[in-house]
Image (tube, rainbow, N blue to C red; front, side):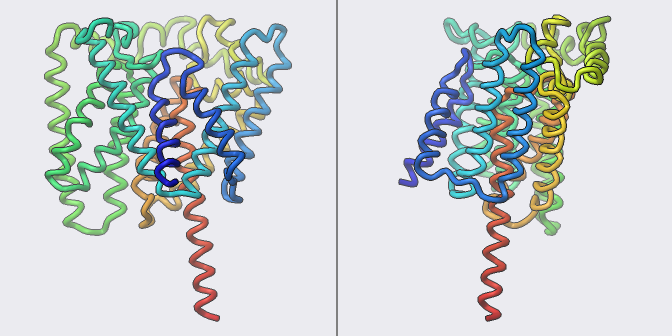
Length: 399
């Protein structure tokens, strides 16, 4: 039964790496899985109630914003997806709390999905397979995704997870995991997503800092430093080799510029931020999902502005509180010696990167973002249950 459960959850995570068309197989499969699990044993503990309440409040804000629209168009479908993704976060939090053994299955499935979709993106970029150009968008690797800017960040968690395995494992283990990490890093690089580059770089630095803080062993810290230097040199060599390939260096120099033309133009990304936040002051209930893009030609490209425009002040407050609560509760237990701590650390540093990334891009409907939320809240709930069990054991011992 445990293998069947792990396989069912792992398949859902695996499907999250293939979103060429919508609704994607992930939506259809997860909707059925959540429904079946709900009938036969999905339990929400008291610790998960803040996650549930804030996600509900966030989506209530979105539903209220629908009332501000003269023409609903695709907005109801958009809100249906938002509600579904909220359910996935609650689902992953609940199942990992009840069955911590699912963490390896989830991480393993994500790793497989990431390597397959990264490989497809690499093949598409270099034309290694017939018809592989379908795995590129705008001359950038996109894998089995519709947007390179989602494809790159999707690879971040498995890449950081592998990096942790390399930094904390032996030399032989490092050799085993070097090739899949190389595939992921190449995929991230060829996505030419500045956000994905920054996300992976920041998460990797935070991971190394976390490993330092977690251990008081000087020998272990020295080993982490040595392995980090080796990994950094290896990745630098790989990038330098990639830059020598035709077309790669030119596109890299263009994408590496901090401000693109569409960022600083009169109605560019940064200007739209100003107009949008001004509109939010006049529209406390929001203006409705997807309306901002019809007014300015492009969507918000900022999750905070997105929350204000599509979910109103109610949704914005709920989202802000959810992020603050998640970071605070996760940090409180981040360095405790638990079997699930490696998964928590990797998910936590990658989530921080996604939150920072959300200031320049809309992460609202990113499936893996809600998966990260679910993993972290699953660990928060596990820690609460662990503390409760310890207190009961101490009370029995005293008695």
